[in-house]
Image (tube, rainbow, N blue to C red; front, side):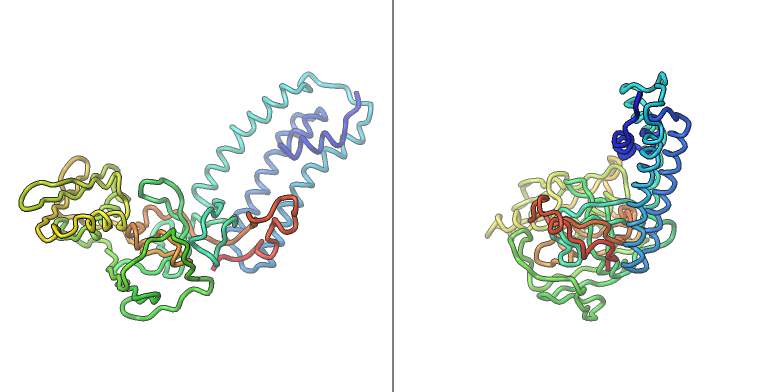
Length: 376
């Protein structure tokens, strides 16, 4: 039975070992799959941990692609040499190929990829314009998950990936503006850290499109530091929301709500399980109108079902902003990002797609000039 080189090549692109299996080399299939995993993992880890320059990054990306083609070409060449001399083995049936592909994925690829993505490096797609023009919609980046392990903490200016702690559980990408203990003040479009004016990042911009609510001309907070003790009921509703989010990041079971009393009578309760940003709370209180003067607020924070009157901060916290300042939901809305929720440091772009272009226009669809860029 004749072996078809093109089919061997295609199977190898699906799973590197399948091309050898198609050629009757079952043991070689496993060896090639293991070799491919090792080679690909080492190159990707190098990309994430050591992006010294765009040239180096592009060179490594080309190597990744080249190895992928080599792992497919070798079995295809073997199939060509076999020609009509091949005698099918018992496992040369389509259903065995499917079983092999699924088995290798579950036994080899999935455990290795899960470990690497959780502990070493992970890839992320950028879905919003909150970081433009530093990072664009359609960018695919690698983040170093080893950057902040142990006692290492993020630095001011780092672009980090973190797990959002509000209603929508997803990954956010923002720039760190301030760290624990620092005072952050925003006056108009100017940011001050400990009363020192900060220069805007090179890629930052202020383009308003209605996605980010207006903020007061002056916005000021001090970032809680480890071992700070905060009296819960002494906080205004914005600061209480921010504290609630810290507690939520640091503890498994947290409840928070604001109890509103008017003229001594219970009026309403706002559960933070349904409202997770300052803007929504601000709009609620604004709707109270002229009766606001007679309102008393009681902050209620529960951890593991017990009411907490004073909360002690456990970890470092960070104030983050999007580089597209007028179109970013960030620490101005939901408060501080806890070190416990930071997953990694954004390092480099390995692909960038212009979603305004059609894939038919392939060379315009891919933003070639951004591939290999270091995230700054």
